[in-house]
Image 1 (spheres, rainbow, N blue to C red):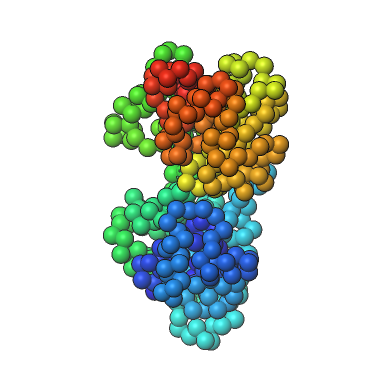
Image 2: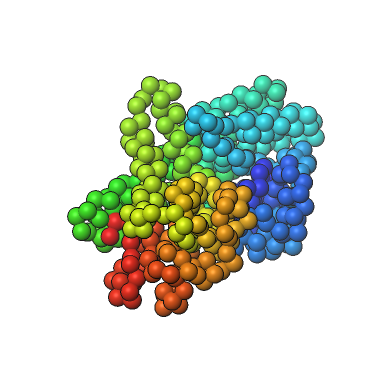
Amino acid sequence: MRICVVGTGYVGLVTGACLASLGNTVICVDKDRRIVNSLNKAVIHFYEPGLKDLVEEKVAAKRLRFTSEIDDAVLRSDIIIVTVGTPPKKNGEADMSAVISVSKNIARIIKKYSKSIGDGYKVIVNKSTVPVGMGDIVEGIILEEGVDRNRFSVASNPEFLKEGSAVYDFMNPDRIVIGASDNRAFNKLAELYRPLNAHIIFTSIRSAEFIKYASNAFLATKVSFINEIAKICEKVGSDVTEVAQAMGLDKRIGKEYLKAGLGYGGSCLPKDVSALIHLARKFKIDPKVLEAVQTVNMDQRMYMINKVKSVLKDLRGKKIAVLGLSFKPETDDMREAPSIYIINGLKKLGARVLAYDPVSELKAKQKIKGVAFCRNIYESITDVDALIIASEWNEFRDLDLKKVKSKMKRPIIFDGRNIYDPNKLREMGFEYFGVGR
Ligand code: UGA
């Protein structure tokens, strides 16, 4: 099939590259010409494992290309997938201006070239996370432009891609959700995804839109739940990793998203919980659970700062290494990264922070000031009073701990992601502080 993907963020680019690898011809559109030029040379503006090779391969095979000319891309395609950003406004509501502007553009193009499109039919698919009802708004925009109702359908097809494993997630989905109001659109999208052999759920557009919010909010709820349990574990002498593992074996609970840590970050969970809270309030529903999820999440960052304070006492002049700056491993995304809050909190208390991350240094420098960024782990921990693990990159798991101990001034580890064995570290002479153990 001929596909146009509007937006080349991690969702758009992963979607475009993966659909190309399923045998489709894909044109990805971005208004930023610099990004388009780089992408045509397979230079990617963010870090996502496996994506560069896939883009390179599909560009070379002429299955995938990038352009700033949206008119041509829309005209050539049967399916137009919108993946532009929906960032949160100050009040938590999702900002729909990019989705609306792209929809107006698509409507204009279909109308303007209606003669050359002839009897052609296009499905406009929304993959961006949008408030319930947005599909109707997009349909309204296109009809208002005077486009014949038989020439297009609007559909919602939310994405469930995790940064860091987005290519794998696309190719191995737990389910694919297609929301539409007519069989033409359902059939076309079912055909698109047929090679994945996945469980497809057909729903209304409004349900599809809500499924995305409810899913992300539930994942956030699991994380905040286990973080609260972790705090209690610490007081009663249990180990949250053991508690979570056993809980997770109950199929009704499930083992995913039960890792206690420094709280959830990133561009999605925080934004979608806020948007759902906003939506509930709009309908005079008091979103008690969601508000608690959010509060627990913010507290989790303070919890780590307080823990460091209670061990090191006066932080003035103390040197602390923070390892892992991105909001989670395998990405360079710094949006809502717990490390930002923790480092700023430590600095406020007078500590000197040395920071290291395998890939996110460039983006971290834009978000965190007054910190010494180090080129490797051992440089960052030399002569420090303590070390904090803020995100669980594999290279931190494999550290030569003897060497670590010899380099640190005081062998104190705050393991914000519970990646080490507390007994082993204590035996080696470290003071070890995990989360909930
Ligand atoms: C999330 C969802 O998982 C995807 O399904 C969704 O498509 C995406 O948002 C989106 O809406 O675009 P992502 O933001 O990439 O994906 O990150 P996750 O892997 O879900 O992790 C979110 C945060 O929760 C991270 O900060 C992570 O460290 C934290 N987390 C996750 C925990 O603290 N404990 C866990 O057990 C799991």
